[in-house]
Length: 316
Image (cartoon, rainbow, N blue to C red):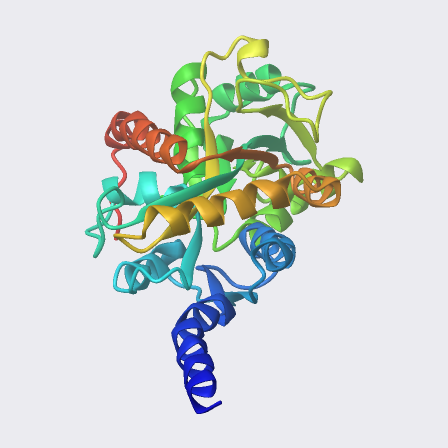
């Protein structure tokens, strides 16, 4: 009896570390305040991933430096499968060309999954004159003092998407940076700035309400959230810009953990309710595995280097 009891206890002690590993909470860190698209997507994923992983998955917001702060912390975390960051592509492919970072976007993280892709909406407010983007740009060219466009911040993907638009259309446009998309949209509605370049989620409800007009999107294809709105290329402006959200782990994350998390993300994105919420933000659920995310990131990093240099923008 004693031998059987000892054997049972020994077996239980050996199984305990594995059980504890399964019970440990997984954190998805978001480098932005609650309520934004990154936060909402992370919470949608966490809710679905709890069931598929059999573990508690929570979202922890750590805003700062447009998502760069939390990436600096992820770099220093152990590769134990407990901590991940849901990051917009800007922190990985734009910031390296602008800032002296405490992380290398390629070497210091383990890509896990691409979650969504998205483009940007070119939105005109009541301060712009013209029925379509071409006529608005013609009006701006004739009135250079009014040729301004707003974005949610300097050094962001929308900032440089606006510069690509300016170059491709041959119309000098002046960037007006705001601290977030909401205040930029309010000034657009109020007529203080005639044009805005940002994610469709910032202006789509105002567009539907007739307060502003989304005149074009910057993707290669039309947005499912805005099927009647043409792309820039469709209206004869030969440029495009898009971005993505990806899930990353710390460096050295074991392949089995990467694959397990990637499967959970893929399964979550197949849920119709999750897809509907993501489409509602003007984003596209577009899963890709770790290798594909890594390749996309490197391609975007190279793609933005020259436009950023040509813009002459210097980060403060």
